[in-house]
Length: 328
Image (cartoon, rainbow, N blue to C red; front, side, top):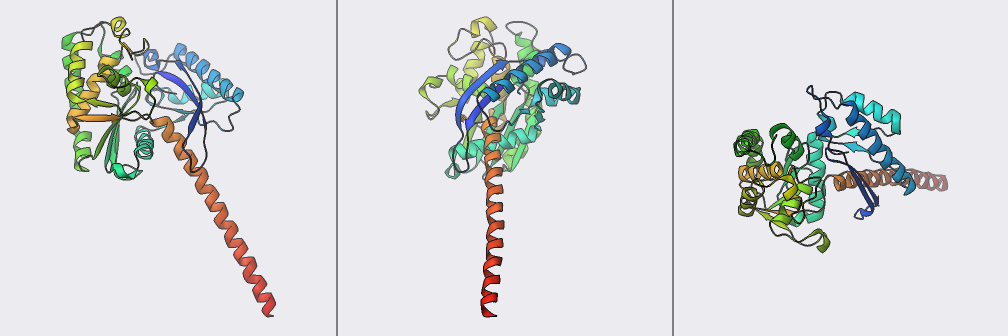
């Protein structure tokens, strides 16, 4: 349950294997647009959430899913009535959403990126722009050395800062300054961890930005190398910030659902790359959902190993007892 959509991915998953998507379904949510002045999700938003989660639950049942891993991110996490919303959703659908912390989002996304690129990638720095938040992480292992989550999501910033279409140039400049200020401390901590051998961008926002600057379309497959450069991103911002959302939706790779928030997303991407001194990002097809799945597979594998280890100890004890019996 993200800020923009309810997204159900059904996977064939097993220890030692990569999660293979068997079905992929989503429905538009835009929860940040249902926040009242106190930061609570209003009744209409809760009703839409219940409907979306209920539909996902029904589809999972139809697909024969053995286990459901329902989780929620920034929009619900930051809502002032989050607990009440979770209670209503559970009562109406039977699904209890687990709210991931911002740091957990960053860490699980980093895990997915590390598994995709492997150990040979060295130090990875990852950026992920969602609807409600921006996640930053860096590290040389599967657990990052540093992980941050900031309320700099594309939908959140669009909702809070832009009230005209296209946005006023003055508002764009003020928002850019705000994003820069929010990034100062996290960027300093990230840079202190060491220079990245590989800089990565995850999320639909980064995939869209890369496509708009010339990267291969999704139809080319997930293993095609896609990059986003800082110069290309700056030129893109100058272009799309003067367009209406309707005109942006006509651009190849931009969906009508996200066309209104791509300017804010581009500003966050450019500011984050600049703050971290990154001139280029590789776009990774795996992100938070894959990280959650991979962690669940790891947990299952660990439980199986523990069970086998326990069996081994028991068998060893029985063998030892038999030997002592023969001696007697």
